[in-house]
Image (cartoon, rainbow over all chains, first blue to last red; front, side, top):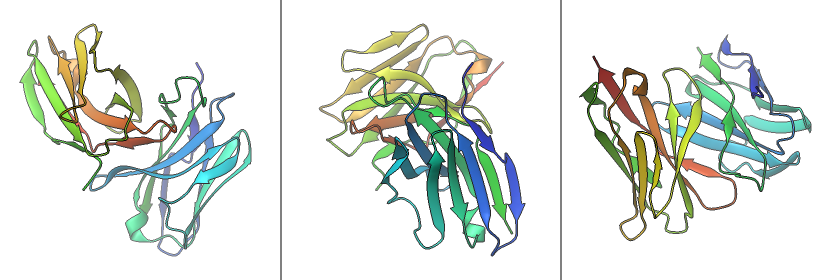
Length: 115
Length: 109
């Protein structure tokens, strides 16, 4: 049963610290998304990649957030420096572009708390 | 204004009841629509697609009204296991999805 995996599942850190979240998409999926979910805003798209190339990161605060795909099996989202308002659940999702591309498979999320 | 809007609920219904959710969308360029389900503290998962002609999957029926720009989800014979948040989702056709904030359903014994 193929799944998207994310690490860590939970992260508590102090304001100003760097946070790195990792995602392993489903093997064969060439499109990877990063979302942030909060009670106030719901699910927001931060960035996405196709074939490891960034296509859109307009949803991401550029000054502190960065997203990369070093290889086809790993996507990373970094926050530096972190702030309390970054506290949220960060989801990674993947899909196979061109084949039912609307069905995105989500990972379990990283629950981030910045104090 | 958010592109996809939903009543956050919660909708409290007894087992066996029929419940319906609506959502409205503002982007007329949206081509495809879906319902995702999210259990408490879990990730969203695709529930079903929404077609203008209607789409039925067991106890679930989804409908799209393009003229009025709304999408509906009907759940018949509610089960306790249907308790979750239901996310209305639109797509402009470039793989990106726009999620509503969700409608919470609580089914009680």
